[in-house]
Image (cartoon, rainbow over all chains, first blue to last red; front, side, top):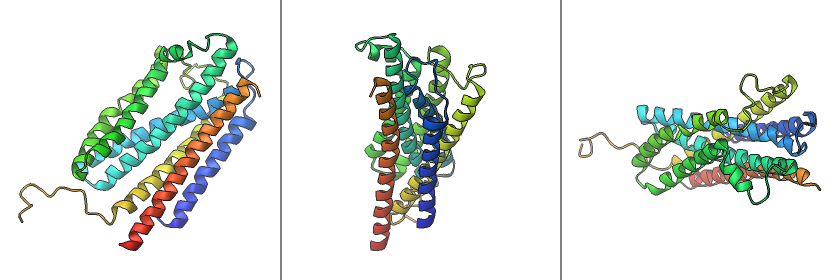
Amino acid sequence: MRPRSAAALGLAVALALALNLTLGLVLAPPAAAFSAPVAQRLFYFHVPAAIAAYAVFTLTMLASAQFLRTRADRWDRLAASAAEVGALLTTIALATGILWSRVEFFSAGAIGTSSFGFALLGDPKFVTTTALWLVFLGYFALRRGVEREDARARLSAVYGILGYIGVPLSYLSSRFSPHPDLLARGSGLAPSLAWMLFGCIACWLVVAAALVALRADAAEHLAEPGPPIHSPPIGAEGA
Amino acid sequence: MSADETALAAGVAVVLGGVGLYGLHLWRLRRTASRTQDNA
């Protein structure tokens, strides 16, 4: 990737974030129905970051499957890059969700300071999303722990596919918990808010795609001087 | 500043800080890669 293309992707990230900030902090109408109406604006960062994280973890799974099929190391680099960006986005989704729910429930007097952590652990959405986050932190531990490059790529591809089970679990867990499922049909989300939310999701998908492209490109450049990661076919070593 | 506003400010700081620091990480990776290639 040329430096100019990388700069264009960086600019796309900055513009998408600026648009997201404008939509969420300026253009979105105040949410009077919430007990913490200011912090409710975190909704426009929390939900889109989570959706973008699901999208890039899907990319990890697809790239991992493609690696196992073709054994081309660029798929391994793409899977690892997408997993890294997914971990960042999940961290943002979890942090904004915790900040928002803490002040929302405090303002409503629903729970006290000492029981907030227990209330979070009682929310299947929080538990499954934290599990997903930990699974992909484990993915990086695995990559660091295996020295042989071909074994590392194979193992992390299998792990990336198996770990993907956390995505549908995290997404569907809101059907079985008090966590609002705002993207489901009949969720009661006003059309103007829904369009605002979809705009923010589009911004975060742009951010995620640009970050994955930049990360994969950096990984490719770092890998170029080294030897290819393929093992030679069995019996070819002595040839 | 109320707790409500503090939560929003902290959330926005997490978003901008997270993406900003990751952008810095990517910039350093690219710089390392180009130096490695120049030396090779």
